[in-house]
Length: 396
Image (tube, rainbow, N blue to C red; front, top):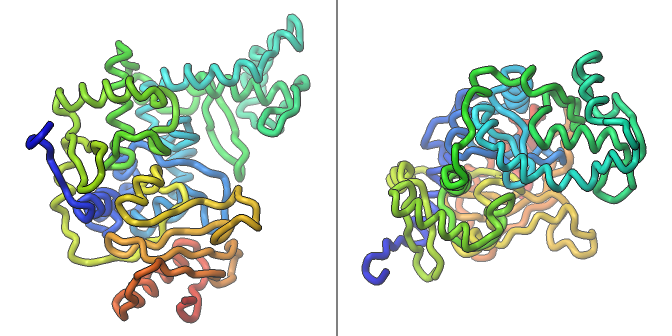
């Protein structure tokens, strides 16, 4: 490309991401309206059931949306049904209006459940899918604990009950959706009974090319600024084939839907949606301290974060204790456009003050009184989100 390359500094890249994800409160997201606005921008937030100081989606939203409470997300998911559980990068939450647009993703994802299901070989003529459908028709919404049909081959990740595999299959193809959750248990119903008719009337794409254009641009928007290098941000259906991804990215650049640029000293291109160029100019006058989720959208590509922020982060919940460098559930600490620390909280308990077990400063951080004041303020806000008392003093 020679002189035609658009080049930005690492600091500009970092500041763009901070502005884009509202990690400096520049966009003024508040309450449930703020949650919906953020989803419209990033498309998906990754779901994870672990709950130490809130589940992953809660932690993402508390850092971006003023006055956020977990019940707001529950309301949008299971009462208003403006949001829905579905597979994207991994298990995610996304706008219900995108449900039909994900048809191709569901079809591809359902292939992996067919082998698990394998119901005809085990139950002969009995059609367990019809059994599941009939059960919902007669009894209403059901969870896997409410129905037990057949045995399935046990495995570490598989279903022990054939009926659970069948529920999962009907969910994967979109016939069922998650209508509610009791803790982490999914409660299923027919999608047509749950989601708003207006959302279900939105058409799927007429061609594979149109779908891929939408899906690739959407994934770029989930991070905001994303490089063309295989990694965590490109997980999921359709993205593993590098040549296909490159072809779609180039087509989107030629059509003016996304912008290609380069970051100093990094030899792979980055992309952002054309409508998001404005976030290079957002106000960055006041540095905020934010506690990030382990699976935060900003952290989807750990290698990219390492290059841009000089911050190496690994979620160690599945790492054996003796091999952990930090701790079981550790949250990054952002100050302005720099990662300054990480900390390990105790699992939250009602009416018990927020407890920080360990705090690790990043190498080279200069601690200032302004920084400590910002940390103190954020700890109080974090405790308020958790509805527990704040620590009496800074735990650092």
